[in-house]
Image (cartoon, rainbow, N blue to C red; front, side, top):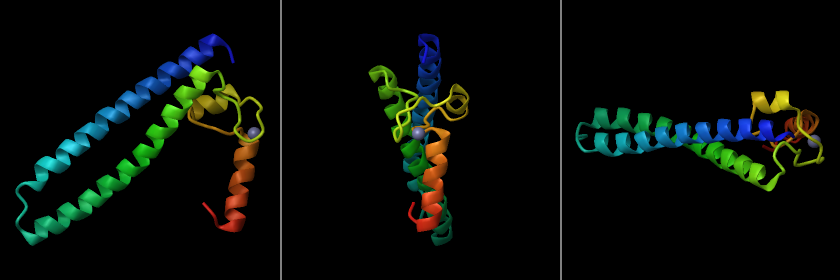
Length: 121
Ligand SMILES: [Zn+2]
């Protein structure tokens, strides 16, 4: 991969990470401040279901944050855009669509087929 492409993805990933971390921060503040005045059981139930929804989203975000960090490390190590499984380069088009992709499209497809047939995720 050329240096200008690496710079492009580094910027993209860094901005994405900043956005996610900014949003994650707000969610925590929201959780703490809204918990103070909840004595009504109904409010409490609504709050709990909203909170579990928020936490589910945050779970997904934290997975994404880990992937972004791993991709940024790969850029530093000079192995970004190389498939984890077969070691060939992942196409720029695929990385633009999914900058945290760790596998080339062939290996990804194979992995998904394996998961579907075994039921393991
Ligand atoms: Zn591969």
